[in-house]
Image: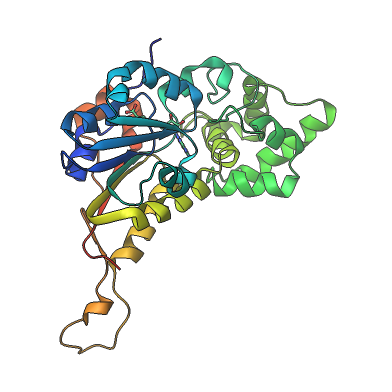
Amino acid sequence: MTFKHVTVLLHEAVDLLDVKPDGIYVDATLGGGGHTGEILKQLSTGRLYSFDQDQTAIDYNADRYASEIAAGKLVLIHQNFRNLQTSLQDQGVTAVDGIVYDLGVSSVQFDEGDRGFSYNHDARLDMRMDQDQDLTAHEIVNQWPFNQLVRILTRYGEDRFGKAIARKIEQHREQAPIDTTFELVEVIKEAIPAPARRHGGHPAKRTFQALRIAVNDELGALEDSLTQALDLLALDGRAAVITFQSLEDRLVKQMFREKTSGPDLPPGLPVLPDQYQPSFRLLNRKPILPPAAERAANHRADSAKLRGIERVRLD
Ligand SMILES: C[S@@+](CC[C@H](N)C(=O)[O-])C[C@H]1O[C@@H](n2cnc3c(N)ncnc32)[C@H](O)[C@@H]1O
């Protein structure tokens, strides 16, 4: 089985973790196993727990890293990363030295025609990362009320034509269900005025992004998981997060800012008392971006941003 996914910010993200050879690490987004492989190279007696909610990714890496798994160096966990804490607890793990997130979908999920993630492949509207989940893009497009459609298209797609697209969807589905990605693309094209369709990328890009975020509750899962991840970090433990769109990046940036800033105190206090010192520090003030050569070679890298945080004291 091949798994064609080119890892973005491979070394930058793992370097940010500053892997200790005997440490306990987590890769929250296993995918094709790029970051997992790089962390494994740096471990001696340590152990890595790698999560994915997609069975395809788990099966592929079970093969790829069979010897590391047999040696007890790598444990694959088929779970949504929003269940990070309980899944690790089940493994007897209550603190970790580092965790990496490389968010979104892998190229394999995109390119597997039948998953319905891509407006370039004709498939049933699906977009589930976890094949066992009930909610699909088909259900959202065909059953969610107009107002809810407008909300996700404008909020998650940041689409100024969200309302117009929702209205067209409503008109079409009254006649017959919208079953496939290509049918949806036609509906979107009808809703967007011709001049606006000529620039700004594929006209369906924002709608597909919005549906994917909604189907997989991507922002909710990230917020839940990252909160648990920061709680799990041991002293000197680090988290590195790669995002691919502004909503995710904003969430990570705000959460990191909250964790690394002290309370608002009256000015003039000579030294911040110990109990008010933040427990974390930012590893980079500005996000790390992929180098130009990486961006030129891999269009997925275009929008990638890497942020890191370190625990500097225990609460
Ligand atoms: C961009 S890929 C990761 C690629 C990987 N770093 C590599 O180097 O090959 C993201 C992966 O994370 C998984 N994923 C996304 N959200 C998840 C979640 N909430 N829980 C578990 N896995 C998730 C996806 O199924 C996908 O396989």
